[in-house]
Image 1 (tube, rainbow, N blue to C red):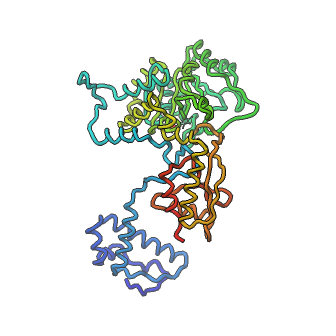
Image 2: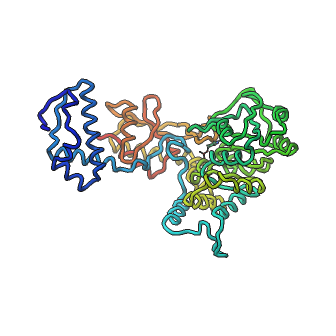
Image 3: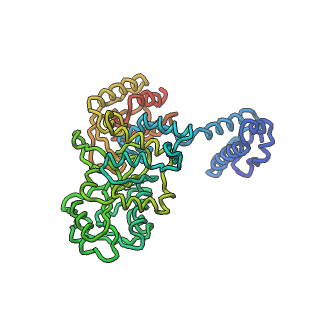
Length: 465
Ligand SMILES: *Cc1c(COP(=O)(O)O)cnc(C)c1O
């Protein structure tokens, strides 16, 4: 166990049990759990073993010294850091699934903290003192904001689609256009979800064109649902056709089947009216005659992870009574955050100013330019010399407005003696990791997904001079 041994043979490494008997290492088990110390030892020995196997000659550390124990202790402290932690999103993708999608408004954060720290009337009617519904307050808000007769909130939009199809089409047929058989990512493929629900998919039309008569021809005694899906992460352009919602709704009504739409990113306000890109508004979809619409809470709505199903009261009542509804129900923290977020859509609030996703979406270019100049100044102080401010293109992401660029401003840098990839990796290793974009050999920070409070963290993440 001496530091002077030089070896290329992994067999010369000591046993874990023997190391645990070393006084300096044994002392660590007073401070940390036995399992933590063993894991750290295994990691250290594993690294030595791997080096030897690859043919390196290694001087063995002196396992008996306090220095080695300190190294183990440092390893354990690193392992104790939370794995899930805040990062800086400089990617320019507003709703970034890998980075946790929508940020919550302060009101939503407070609501979550309140119901987490205290008992809450989750399923208690304060008027009667009897059991109540956890859904009622948000259901009322969703109906007021979308014109729906009724609504149900579940764990996420994927669960909403699975529940709706299971309850409405199990053992029967679902007609969907070939151009809308989406894969969202994370193994959410519409044909698989339909199969999982126990329904049978009947594909109609072609990839680029589906007409109302294709749906009409496919209808039969087994049909339960016409399913429309928002092609949220791709776009079919060129020689294309798809029936309108009104046409589909008329066909569904005449044949006594249900028209459902998997909308993905549900937006509650008309963005086009604010000069922003056009995205179907939930209220318009229901008005067009769709019976049930499903959308996410943490995309453009700007709330917590959840899935919302809105539409006909008789159908929502069936969904609520389905056994899967209990399995995919929303938790109280998300419910509190959703209620608080939905209230920001009501007067006197201004959702575009108060809901972070919509703030980012609607921030004027002049504000982004100022933010870029502030960041450039901080980076100069951090001894970055090659700094450029350029126009850039941000994206909504999260399956909304596919392929549609949002005008933005970016700061891009290089660092002396380091490739862009190496610099990006260094930034990801910061105490608050910075997730940037690589563009033409430069590391790029898009201002549209940043907040002013993020800028000092970016500067601090820069490599030491
Ligand atoms: C994002 C998306 C989903 C999945 O939503 P989750 O809330 O992540 O489960 C389903 N359908 C469409 C069209 C989507 O865009």
